[in-house]
Image (cartoon, rainbow, N blue to C red; front, top):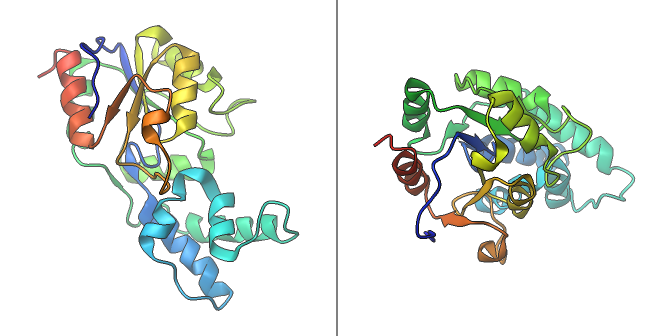
Length: 228
C-alpha cells in the first residue's frame, strides 16, 4: 500500500469492472480454454490466463492460439471466444472481498458509485445483473465514441452521478485506467490485486495512490468518506 498524507473525501466512487470490482478471470479462463479445446489444444494454467484478462478478448486469442491481431483468423477466433464466454458470464465471477459491504454502506449513506469499463455492454450488463449490482451509472466500451484511456467515459460517469469529476475516485488495475483518471481530474487509485502481467511495473503507473488488497481500498474509502 502506498498512501499520500491524506486522501480527499470522495463525492463518488467509480470502478473499473474486471480485475478491480469483480473477479471475472475464472469465467474468461474457462472460455479461453474452451477455445483451445476447440482446436484440440491442452488447457492453459489459470494464472497464465488471469494475467491477460485486462487486455481484452484479442489478447486472450493471442494467448490461446498464438494469433496476433493481423492473423487472418484472429477476428473469427475472437468471435468464437466471446461466444464461449457469453454462455455464462457469471458462472464463477464474484466481487473482490469486501466490496459487497462497501457498496451497501455507500448506498445506505447516499454516496454515489458507478462503473466505467472497456467491457462491451452485452457482457457487462448480464454480469452485473447476475451479481445483483445496481450502480448509479454504467459506462461500457461501446457507449461512447471513445473509451479508456480517454477521459470522456469518466467525465460522463461523473455527469451521470451528478458530481464534479475532480471530487471522484477512479479505481483500476491497468495503466490505461490511471491515464484516464488523471486526464479526467479524478483521484487515480491503482489496485495491485488485479490482472497484472508479470513484469508490469505497477508503481510506474500515473496513479495518486496504490493498494495491495481490496480490504485496503475499502478501509481507505470508508475513512476518507467518514463512513467508518
